[in-house]
Length: 98
Image (cartoon, rainbow, N blue to C red; front, side, top):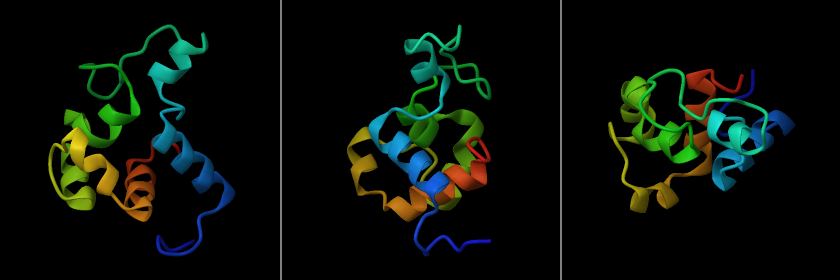
């Protein structure tokens, strides 16, 4: 298994680029592309399944957000300061993309 500080694999790179650009395999993006009927995040059923919601606001992932990213809810202004390896670790531990 790769460590979180090593170079990302091709899959890791795809997930990371998707999260950074908003083109991740989340329901909101899939709905925009016509590949999914619903844009709501299935874990919390509270908001649209956007990358910002997944990373910073989802109540179902709050403990994971706190443990890896440093706070229960992250403000939009602080998202740019998250290092890529923490973002990738968050995505891996969430098991949403893997």
